[in-house]
Image (cartoon, rainbow, N blue to C red):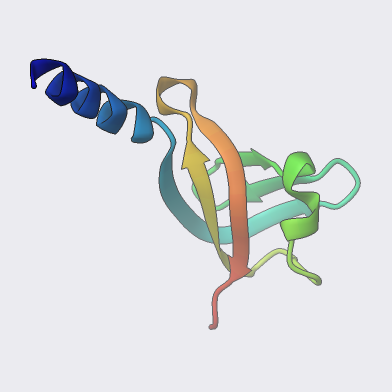
Length: 87
């Protein structure tokens, strides 16, 4: 019984290593060639791996939400969605 409990706890801990998270803000700049996005909080996002998720017509002034999988202490894992919020 103890082995089952320890295995269950370990499995739960490992399953939470890729946590979903969101962030958002106003686009200050978007470089379509280099796939670099800068938000108003001065965060810089490399969107090259998420190229097909970038909304058509994304431009400065758009308020957006970025959904991504957190890689824990390593930072951002995979971007899963990018959406332009209604004004």
